[in-house]
Length: 149
Image 1 (cartoon, rainbow, N blue to C red):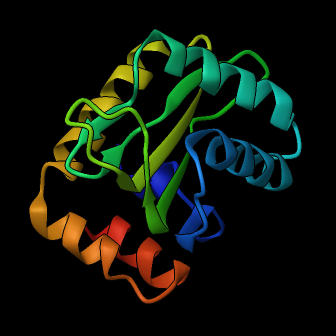
Image 2 (image 1 turned 180 degrees about the vertical axis):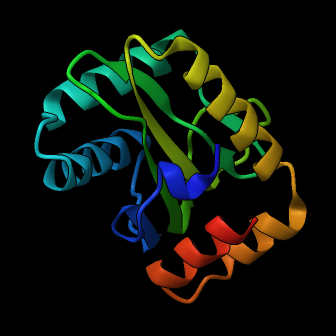
């Protein structure tokens, strides 16, 4: 699996306004709905929030990977995001988050879900990737950084 298989330039957001965890997840749900017409923002948001209630997807070091399965989703969808200001995300290390990858997966793709999460964890463990992503000039630059790692 390569990031370019699940990520598009239109789903990379550089210096997005985060404000709060809830507002950010709502904003991203709406952006996914706009780009993937077969999905409803409310269903995406409900699924993301249900997953967050199980335990925060804030990994620490300013990184979060909110993810969920959505019944009406028919392809793996990723969004890479940098925030203009870090926000509280209930991370394991209590650090605010400024770098996120939102992952939406079809319900039936359990194995693929796990593989993508493992790939993302490996990617976000690479300090040079995180620094490059955080220093991206714009969304196109962010996309190009993501697909070259």
